[in-house]
Amino acid sequence: MATRDIYESGFDEDVSNDGTTPCPECTGQVRTNSVETICEDCGLVIDEQRIDRGPEWRTHDQDQRKRTGAPLTAARHDRGLSTEIGRRKDANGNELSGQKRQRLSRMRREQNRGRFQSKAERNLAHGLGEVRRIASALERTDSVRDQACQLFRSAQNEDLLRGRSIEAIAAASIYGASRCNGHTWLLDDVVDTARVEQSRVKSAYKTLNTELGLPAQPVRPSDFIPRLASEMDVPADIRQRARRLAEQSESTGAASGVKPSAFAAACLYKAGCEEGQWLTQEKVAEVASVTATTIRSHRDTLNELAI
Image (cartoon, rainbow, N blue to C red; front, side, top):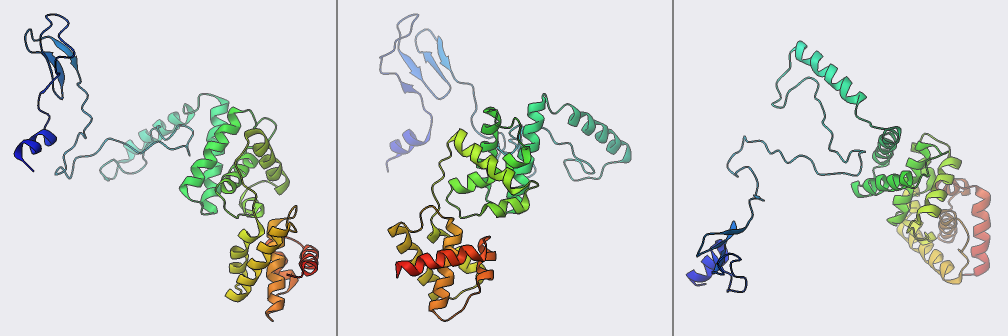
C-alpha cells in the first residue's frame, strides 16, 4: 500500500468540498475536516461538530474509573437508571464509619420513599421483581427474562392488570415468553415457583394470549420426548422409538386436540413396552403431570393406529 493511501484512510485531513457548496457569504471555496466546515477565503465557519464520540479514558489508565454505567434493561421499572446507595463500603471498597453509615441509611430510606411517582409505577416495580424471581428460580436465560418483563409492561399498558393478580400476570409472562421462544415448559413448572394457584396463572396466560396476540406456536408431542425421556432416564432406543411414534401420530392427526406432554408420555410408555422395559403408568403420568387414566387412553389410541 502506498504512503498516500495510508494517509488518506488513516487520518482526518482537510477534504475539499469540490465546489458544489460555495460559501454563503463570499461564494468562496469551502473545505471540510473532522471538526468543522470553513470557507478558505473569508474564514466563515459554516458548520461544526464538537461532540467527542470517543471514550473519556485512555487504555493505559488502569485506575481511572469509567462512568458509562450499566446498559439499559427492561427487567427494572426505571430501565436501570436509578441510583443505588451502598451500605458498608464506599466506591473504593473502604469501610465506612458508623456516622456515615447512619447518614447513608437515612438517604436510602428517603430515596425509597420517593422512588415511585405513582401507584402504577409501584405495581410495575413489584411485577418486574416477581418476573425476575421466577426467571431466576427456573434458570431462564436473560433474553427470556427480558422478553417476559416487556410482556408484563405491555399487559400493564393495555390495562390487563385490572382485577387480576400481579403475581399471576408475572407468572403468565414467563410462561408466554417461554412459549414464544419454542421452549417445552409445562405450566406446572411455572406454577410450582409462582405464589398463586394454577387456575389464576392459566387464566392470566389466556388473557395475554388473546389480548396481546402472542406469537406462540403450537407445541407438538415430539418436542416433549427428549425432556420426558431425560427425566425418566430411559435408553436411547426407547427414546428414538417414542419419537417415531409421536411423529407418525402427528402426521395422521391423532395427536391433535390433546395435551402434548400427555401424548408424549404415552408414546414413551408404549415404546418401553415394545422394547421390554416396562415403565409404570404412574411414573410416566407423574413426570408428565397427568393421570394414569390419560396415559392408558392415549396408549389405546396408539394401538389403534398400529404404527
